[in-house]
Amino acid sequence: MTASATARELPVPQHEIRAQHTATTVTVYQAYPPSIGLPAARDGRFPAVWKRDRMTWIKPSFLWMMYRCGWATKQDQETVLAVEIVREGFDLALDGAELSHYVEGVHPDHATWRRNLRRAPARVQWDPERDLHLNRLPYRSLQLGLSGEASRRYADEWTVSIRDVTPLAREIHALVRAGRDDAATALLPGEQFYSPGGAQPVPGLRADRLQRGPSNSHASMANTPSSTAPAEP
Image 1 (tube, rainbow, N blue to C red):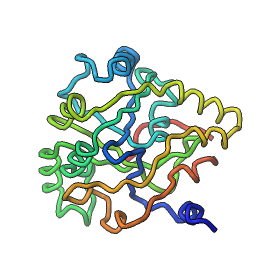
Image 2: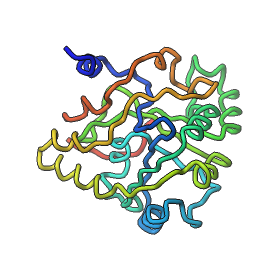
Image 3: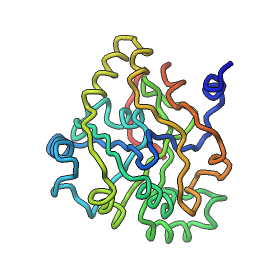
Image 4: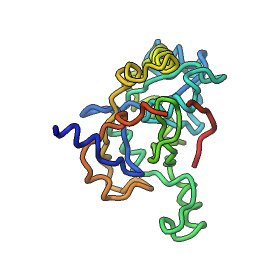
Protein backbone atom coordinates (compact mmCIF):
# COMPACT_ATOMS: atom_id res chain seq x y z
CA MET A 1 0.00 0.00 0.00
CA THR A 2 1.36 3.40 -0.96
CA ALA A 3 1.86 6.25 1.49
CA SER A 4 -0.78 8.34 -0.31
CA ALA A 5 -3.30 5.49 -0.06
CA THR A 6 -2.58 5.16 3.64
CA ALA A 7 -3.06 8.92 4.14
CA ARG A 8 -6.45 8.78 2.41
CA GLU A 9 -7.59 6.00 4.75
CA LEU A 10 -6.74 7.95 7.91
CA PRO A 11 -9.77 9.56 9.54
CA VAL A 12 -9.97 13.31 9.06
CA PRO A 13 -9.77 15.19 12.38
CA GLN A 14 -12.91 16.95 13.57
CA HIS A 15 -11.17 20.32 13.29
CA GLU A 16 -8.48 20.77 10.66
CA ILE A 17 -7.66 23.56 8.24
CA ARG A 18 -7.64 22.30 4.66
CA ALA A 19 -6.89 24.65 1.78
CA GLN A 20 -5.28 24.98 -1.60
CA HIS A 21 -1.98 26.64 -0.79
CA THR A 22 1.56 27.27 -1.94
CA ALA A 23 4.67 28.24 0.00
CA THR A 24 3.50 31.86 0.00
CA THR A 25 -0.26 31.94 -0.62
CA VAL A 26 -3.60 30.45 0.43
CA THR A 27 -6.74 30.31 -1.73
CA VAL A 28 -10.10 31.18 -0.18
CA TYR A 29 -13.55 31.45 -1.71
CA GLN A 30 -16.33 34.01 -1.65
CA ALA A 31 -19.54 34.49 -3.66
CA TYR A 32 -20.88 37.86 -4.78
CA PRO A 33 -23.44 39.40 -7.11
CA PRO A 34 -22.02 39.95 -10.59
CA SER A 35 -21.84 43.70 -9.96
CA ILE A 36 -19.04 43.06 -7.46
CA GLY A 37 -17.64 39.69 -8.49
CA LEU A 38 -17.06 40.40 -12.18
CA PRO A 39 -15.11 43.67 -11.71
CA ALA A 40 -13.08 42.04 -8.92
CA ALA A 41 -12.06 39.15 -11.18
CA ARG A 42 -11.42 41.46 -14.13
CA ASP A 43 -9.20 43.88 -12.21
CA GLY A 44 -7.66 41.43 -9.73
CA ARG A 45 -8.76 43.56 -6.79
CA PHE A 46 -11.99 44.38 -4.99
CA PRO A 47 -13.80 47.44 -6.35
CA ALA A 48 -14.45 50.57 -4.33
CA VAL A 49 -18.07 49.51 -3.83
CA TRP A 50 -16.82 46.55 -1.76
CA LYS A 51 -17.41 47.74 1.80
CA ARG A 52 -14.19 47.52 3.72
CA ASP A 53 -15.82 48.48 7.02
CA ARG A 54 -18.06 45.40 7.09
CA MET A 55 -17.23 41.87 8.23
CA THR A 56 -16.44 39.53 5.37
CA TRP A 57 -16.27 35.72 5.60
CA ILE A 58 -13.68 33.73 3.67
CA LYS A 59 -13.82 29.98 3.13
CA PRO A 60 -10.83 27.77 2.24
CA SER A 61 -13.19 24.91 1.27
CA PHE A 62 -14.49 24.95 -2.31
CA LEU A 63 -17.30 22.51 -1.56
CA TRP A 64 -18.43 24.41 1.52
CA MET A 65 -18.61 27.49 -0.70
CA MET A 66 -20.71 25.51 -3.15
CA TYR A 67 -23.03 24.53 -0.32
CA ARG A 68 -23.36 28.12 0.81
CA CYS A 69 -24.03 29.59 -2.63
CA GLY A 70 -25.99 26.65 -4.05
CA TRP A 71 -23.51 26.09 -6.88
CA ALA A 72 -23.68 29.82 -7.73
CA THR A 73 -27.47 29.81 -8.08
CA LYS A 74 -28.49 31.79 -4.98
CA GLN A 75 -29.40 35.43 -5.33
CA ASP A 76 -26.43 37.78 -4.89
CA GLN A 77 -24.08 34.77 -4.89
CA GLU A 78 -24.00 34.09 -8.61
CA THR A 79 -20.29 34.85 -9.04
CA VAL A 80 -17.84 32.63 -7.17
CA LEU A 81 -14.36 34.01 -6.65
CA ALA A 82 -11.15 32.19 -5.79
CA VAL A 83 -9.12 34.78 -3.90
CA GLU A 84 -5.43 34.01 -3.50
CA ILE A 85 -4.01 35.81 -0.47
CA VAL A 86 -0.60 35.87 1.16
CA ARG A 87 -0.07 33.28 3.88
CA GLU A 88 1.25 35.99 6.16
CA GLY A 89 -2.13 37.74 6.12
CA PHE A 90 -4.11 34.53 6.55
CA ASP A 91 -1.95 33.50 9.50
CA LEU A 92 -2.15 36.97 11.02
CA ALA A 93 -5.95 36.85 10.94
CA LEU A 94 -5.98 33.39 12.50
CA ASP A 95 -3.50 34.51 15.12
CA GLY A 96 -5.86 37.20 16.40
CA ALA A 97 -9.12 35.31 15.95
CA GLU A 98 -11.75 34.32 18.49
CA LEU A 99 -14.42 31.64 18.17
CA SER A 100 -17.72 33.00 16.88
CA HIS A 101 -19.62 31.23 19.66
CA TYR A 102 -19.04 30.43 23.33
CA VAL A 103 -17.69 26.96 24.14
CA GLU A 104 -17.64 25.68 27.70
CA GLY A 105 -14.19 24.40 28.57
CA VAL A 106 -12.55 26.61 25.96
CA HIS A 107 -13.61 29.96 27.42
CA PRO A 108 -13.50 30.66 31.17
CA ASP A 109 -16.93 32.33 31.04
CA HIS A 110 -19.36 34.12 28.71
CA ALA A 111 -18.16 37.57 29.71
CA THR A 112 -14.54 36.81 28.79
CA TRP A 113 -15.59 35.34 25.46
CA ARG A 114 -17.74 38.39 24.62
CA ARG A 115 -14.93 40.76 25.56
CA ASN A 116 -12.41 38.85 23.45
CA LEU A 117 -14.85 38.67 20.54
CA ARG A 118 -15.36 42.44 20.54
CA ARG A 119 -11.61 43.01 20.42
CA ALA A 120 -10.73 40.31 17.89
CA PRO A 121 -10.08 41.35 14.27
CA ALA A 122 -11.26 37.94 13.08
CA ARG A 123 -13.75 35.22 14.02
CA VAL A 124 -13.37 31.48 13.57
CA GLN A 125 -16.37 29.29 12.85
CA TRP A 126 -16.26 25.53 12.28
CA ASP A 127 -19.09 24.29 10.06
CA PRO A 128 -19.73 20.75 8.81
CA GLU A 129 -17.69 20.04 5.69
CA ARG A 130 -19.66 18.98 2.61
CA ASP A 131 -19.35 16.26 0.01
CA LEU A 132 -20.02 16.53 -3.74
CA HIS A 133 -23.76 16.33 -3.11
CA LEU A 134 -23.48 19.00 -0.41
CA ASN A 135 -24.36 16.62 2.40
CA ARG A 136 -22.70 16.96 5.78
CA LEU A 137 -19.46 15.13 6.47
CA PRO A 138 -18.42 14.07 10.01
CA TYR A 139 -15.71 16.71 10.27
CA ARG A 140 -15.61 20.49 10.17
CA SER A 141 -14.52 23.17 7.74
CA LEU A 142 -13.05 26.54 8.65
CA GLN A 143 -14.79 29.83 8.01
CA LEU A 144 -12.88 32.97 8.89
CA GLY A 145 -14.69 36.26 9.45
CA LEU A 146 -12.61 39.40 8.97
CA SER A 147 -13.57 42.78 10.36
CA GLY A 148 -12.05 46.22 10.80
CA GLU A 149 -8.40 46.40 9.84
CA ALA A 150 -8.31 42.70 8.88
CA SER A 151 -11.12 43.22 6.35
CA ARG A 152 -9.43 46.26 4.86
CA ARG A 153 -6.02 44.59 4.64
CA TYR A 154 -7.59 41.49 3.07
CA ALA A 155 -9.02 43.62 0.27
CA ASP A 156 -6.15 46.04 -0.25
CA GLU A 157 -2.95 44.35 0.93
CA TRP A 158 -3.22 40.58 1.27
CA THR A 159 -4.91 39.78 -2.04
CA VAL A 160 -2.54 38.47 -4.71
CA SER A 161 -5.07 37.46 -7.38
CA ILE A 162 -8.82 37.03 -7.88
CA ARG A 163 -10.26 34.47 -10.31
CA ASP A 164 -13.84 33.88 -11.37
CA VAL A 165 -14.39 30.16 -10.81
CA THR A 166 -18.12 30.23 -11.55
CA PRO A 167 -17.62 28.25 -14.80
CA LEU A 168 -15.74 25.59 -12.83
CA ALA A 169 -18.54 25.43 -10.26
CA ARG A 170 -21.12 24.96 -12.99
CA GLU A 171 -19.06 22.31 -14.75
CA ILE A 172 -18.60 20.29 -11.56
CA HIS A 173 -22.29 20.67 -10.67
CA ALA A 174 -23.32 19.44 -14.14
CA LEU A 175 -21.15 16.34 -13.72
CA VAL A 176 -22.63 15.66 -10.29
CA ARG A 177 -26.16 15.98 -11.66
CA ALA A 178 -25.21 13.56 -14.44
CA GLY A 179 -24.03 11.00 -11.88
CA ARG A 180 -20.38 11.36 -12.93
CA ASP A 181 -18.93 11.77 -9.45
CA ASP A 182 -15.45 10.57 -10.35
CA ALA A 183 -15.16 13.12 -13.14
CA ALA A 184 -16.49 15.84 -10.83
CA THR A 185 -14.02 14.94 -8.09
CA ALA A 186 -11.13 15.13 -10.55
CA LEU A 187 -11.95 18.81 -11.18
CA LEU A 188 -12.04 19.85 -7.52
CA PRO A 189 -9.27 22.17 -6.34
CA GLY A 190 -6.55 20.30 -4.47
CA GLU A 191 -7.02 21.15 -0.80
CA GLN A 192 -4.48 19.86 1.67
CA PHE A 193 -3.81 20.10 5.39
CA TYR A 194 -2.65 23.60 6.32
CA SER A 195 -0.50 24.38 9.33
CA PRO A 196 -0.81 28.03 10.40
CA GLY A 197 2.37 29.91 11.12
CA GLY A 198 0.99 32.21 13.82
CA ALA A 199 2.20 32.34 17.40
CA GLN A 200 -1.21 31.63 18.93
CA PRO A 201 -3.29 28.43 18.57
CA VAL A 202 -6.28 28.75 16.25
CA PRO A 203 -9.53 28.81 18.30
CA GLY A 204 -11.13 25.38 18.25
CA LEU A 205 -8.06 23.80 16.67
CA ARG A 206 -6.27 21.57 19.17
CA ALA A 207 -2.48 21.69 19.09
CA ASP A 208 -2.22 17.97 18.34
CA ARG A 209 -4.10 18.52 15.07
CA LEU A 210 -1.18 20.52 13.77
CA GLN A 211 1.13 17.54 14.19
CA ARG A 212 -0.91 15.45 11.76
CA GLY A 213 0.43 14.81 8.27
CA PRO A 214 -1.25 16.01 5.06
CA SER A 215 -4.67 14.67 4.18
CA ASN A 216 -6.60 14.64 0.92
CA SER A 217 -9.85 16.32 1.90
CA HIS A 218 -11.64 15.38 -1.31
CA ALA A 219 -10.98 11.65 -1.19
CA SER A 220 -14.23 10.89 0.65
CA MET A 221 -16.47 13.61 -0.81
CA ALA A 222 -17.96 11.75 -3.75
CA ASN A 223 -20.87 9.94 -2.14
CA THR A 224 -24.15 11.05 -0.86
CA PRO A 225 -28.42 14.07 -2.36
CA SER A 226 -27.99 17.73 -2.38
CA SER A 227 -29.16 20.25 0.14
CA THR A 228 -28.69 23.94 0.83
CA ALA A 229 -29.12 25.77 4.09
CA PRO A 230 -27.66 28.65 6.08
CA ALA A 231 -24.32 28.42 7.83
CA GLU A 232 -24.22 26.22 10.87
CA PRO A 233 -22.29 26.91 14.11
